[in-house]
Image (cartoon, rainbow, N blue to C red; front, side, top):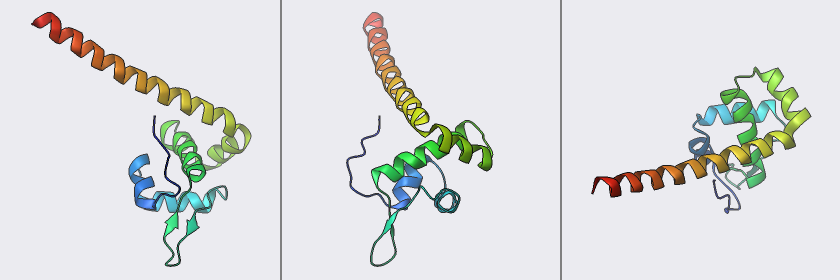
Length: 113
């Protein structure tokens, strides 16, 4: 699971984390007023952990589930908390799977020795 311990994230970091171009994030900002990054004095976007969570939900709806923009907006506004919980569970299961794969590889190596 990702550690959102920073106070702010730059758009480059958010784009890398989500695996989308920075332009996509800027576009989502225009479509979802819930995304409201702060700005530095020089105009650089600063995303809070809350913005990052919102973007994770939007990414899931559009890129993973394949919803069109209007459907994603409707789902986001109707069911945001449940989607956020679902993403948390998915992330925890992925982490657990990774740990199990490491254990399995370790056991396999021991058997071969």
